[in-house]
Length: 357
Image (tube, rainbow, N blue to C red; front, side, top):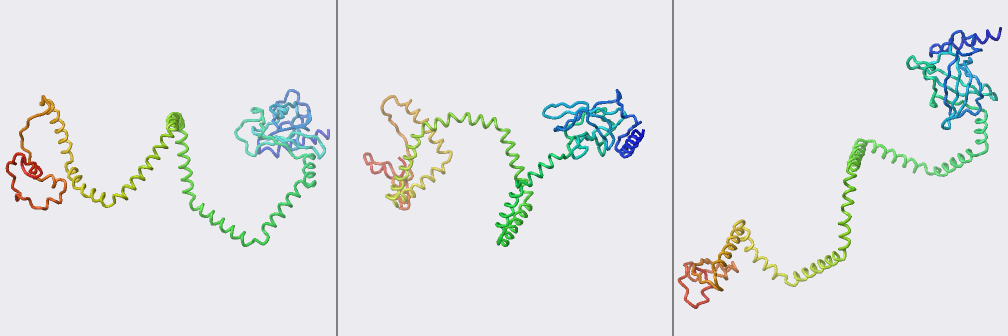
């Protein structure tokens, strides 16, 4: 009777401490025989090697159920918990594997969330996923960690690191301070230009996006350019000969310029007025050549034989010599600028003089 009273007091105390978290126990004195008044909850643990089948399920210090079944799925332990139907736990309840004592057995400790979300209960959402389960420390893990540390697997390495750091920094305080100052300056500069750096990164991201969007076009271009590259490779020898010829032409041109020297320059200078006058003709030169071509075509149609008798007048204001050398125009004409009379028959020298023919 005393044991039943103590259990009832403990359950009521646990209920009073967890009322603000959404947990309540009704008629807690009757937890000993669950019968059909139970519901099942599945908790997924990373591992549960020491959890016994039929182990206790607790909320605080109160026993509210037992472990009904243990199975594995996807390398995880699925623990079926059978809870008393009078135990109301909110959805989002946490589950943890704890030890009853240092050498005792494991049990499942249920802990309601600090802030329950909504009015749903654990009975309505009867699955506690892996992210809401954990496992407390056990003696084996603690002793293994202590043994690993005491065996020197970590202390020797830490001592080596400390010794090497001391050897590196010994006598180099000034250098280290200068290095830290430079590093601070670099970091400050980078921080001042953070906006530009972000802009550059954004631009690179945009370019990368455009290139990614143009991947089919680039692939097609690389595929289509292959025949052209093959053609260029096939004509490589001819290109080489062409380049050698161009190089030889350049050498010959240079030698020609060196040999002609002033004479070539003077001839080009004399040719300049002619080119200037031709340029001044502009569209008129084209029309004149077109008319001349039409004249030649009509002349051929009008000439039945090998020659044509022609009687016409040609006005040549300058002599042939003056046309070829404009500087001669400064010499006064022997006729004083008056047109010449009819040339004497058989006098070919008169053809070189200006005037009307």
